[in-house]
Length: 231
Ligand code: DX5
Ligand code: ZN
Image (cartoon, rainbow, N blue to C red; front, side, top):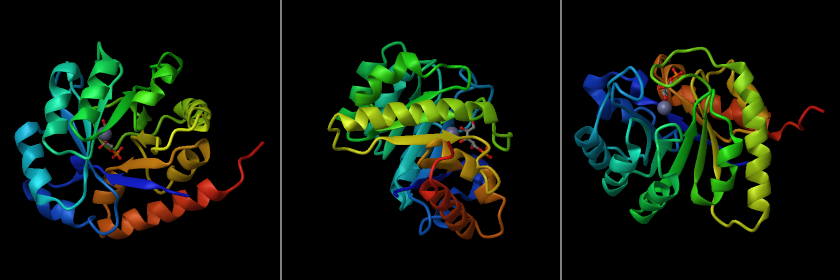
């Protein structure tokens, strides 16, 4: 069962980003970078110049999570910068189809994120436009928050929608990602609900050995994904 683990550098030491990225390069699939603008979320992180440097200096593909207002204006530039994946928020985009297509046209995978209070159903029709559906398991903005367990019901509905969609002959992967409060205690619940892509910030970078923490998370998620679903 394919699993994707993306450590979030929001929990890393921002003065040593290249080393922090290197610490997980052999264990992780992607490096999650939260671009935050102090408008869409009440926090400010990095923008295009830092992303461009990371693209040049980090071995892992970047999984950009744009926690920004006006993603329709900015997302294509992040894709053109060489990111592996660019995720925009459903709550911030006015023209999701156009923007998701622009991201793909620039050579990146396209992702759509839903905040905890945003329903899945209006976006289920758009699954053909995305490579990643991100279900936020906390309100975006900060690391080290507790996973909101009730969001897992939406993850289950999203898994069913993704499987239905894949049943229609889709030949490229469609990842179901969770972000926020994912750690050794909670990742099995997320995987059992149907997630197959996991962002983990504090669970990885607060660990003594970040690479080992990624391997442990992967093993726990894989075991849970293989378990038959409870009826
Ligand atoms: C939160 C960010 C997350 C954050 C997760 O808004 O989108 O990517 O880094 O941090 P943890 O894993 O510590 O909850
Ligand atoms: Zn994130």
